Picture 1 (cartoon, rainbow, N blue to C red):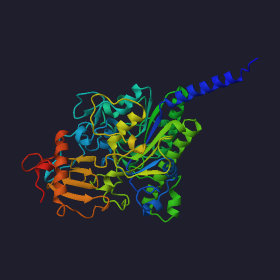
Picture 2: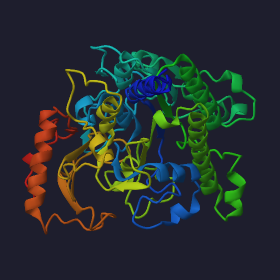
Picture 3: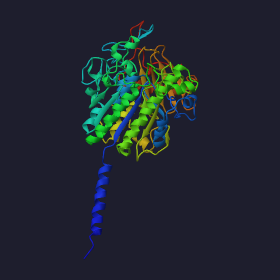
Picture 4: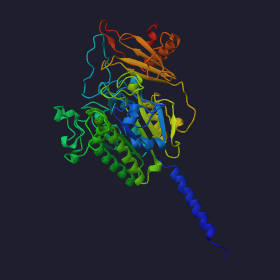
Length: 497
């Protein structure tokens, strides 16, 4: 009698092949770990060619682990301020196009102060809208909406800051998220302390800053960063139990002001010799890093680590109150690298080589098409082409090193208004107030100390022409000149001397 073993073996092998095929077609989970106001050097992971002073002062061991398991981006960029970055990542549009060019908060009210020479344009100060035709707001189908349509459970935890108070965009549930924990109109917490009920009343602040929905943590001696992490990990567990792929937008309020010490880590930095403010800031960074580690542990414990993409990024550079992010020049809101260059790491098991690094540059609006491609989700038919998927970079393919990147800040908040183009090694800044230019070769001068405009006017003219063309194509708003009421000229209309 012929043995049945070979047939059983064949059936087993066939079943394994079907199983493997099914798993290979399974949509990956995506965790976007987004930090607020974290500078390029605010970590023990070096993103520069050498270890810096701040790399030695700060302690972010879980970022180090993530970098060892994935790809480090040394030239990742965001907008120079928070709301523009957040609207860009969720829509794929550049701020020049979506016109949310500064931070939002109160419906119909701009944070821009008066300027003696120019006035800000009538920008979309109400932020992102959940439907068309909302006043001074932009509408676009969002990343979580598209992922949700493909079967993803979409989870928002932490800072939203997409739309102004009393508008449809203030609530992430209106923007495609199935779950919203602690997200609302404000871009900073009232407090990080549960004993202060995450409220600003302790500093006599407006309750508009109070973090919503975390009442169960009141008076529990828990830091806001930790509370958000516990909530995120519970939602991951819920999604896994439901058998759904998930998109977790883990958007920390940290390390934005108010800078309050995380008591779990503060004292060791004091013992290290740091001053009170610097120790508090360092403790907030380590608390954020612990959150990253806790989430990565949850993925591992639930058996979904190998099918989960983790992307770490910051929304803009560090604010001027914090230590300089040397060798970069400038801070948050500035047009210089310290305002727009941010830390970024991507872990994609089976795709991205461990301990890899790329010097190819990417920008915040690239998140939108990249995550759609990762999830196998088609881009919407009516979609801008501002963002470009960086999946080819992750797969080690050659990319266009001369792709132009653009920034546009026509507002009078904190610094004079400006526009920027980065193309290849070159970066041109157009200052709106006096219609002057600055030209830098970034690889040769990362600190932007040598304005090469007089040495290389030909390159400056070439870039100003391309910048002007883009601003016109997107119908980018320009500030108006107080003396005449006329709009500031586009850069290609200004003679370079």
